[in-house]
Length: 106
Image 1: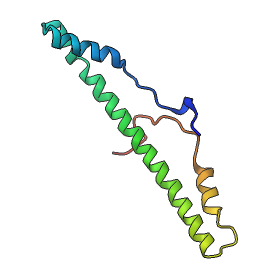
Image 2 (image 1 turned 30 degrees about the vertical axis):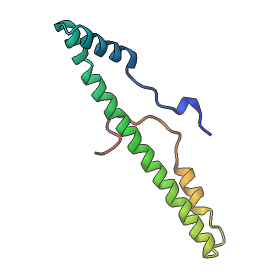
Image 3 (image 1 turned 90 degrees about the vertical axis):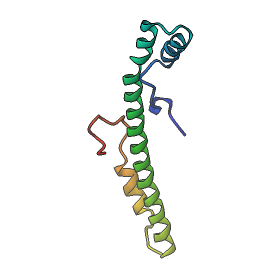
């Protein structure tokens, strides 16, 4: 189950970017070309933000998958409470918040 409020929203107006690009292609005046070029830093910032979100998601998934595998292995080995690993991982899994600029190391 996914909750719509946890889906990252784009931070740029994609329609405006397409409009600027189309205008520059249709009528390449200095104003239309520079308007389209001025979208590049915004696009790069969005790519960077999405890359950080993807990195965070992959780490969260890897942690939960490792806990699930440890629980399955513990069950196979006959441990008395094999779900301990999964419970611990879920307890550490905080409410999802978008990462801050410095939260993820590159």
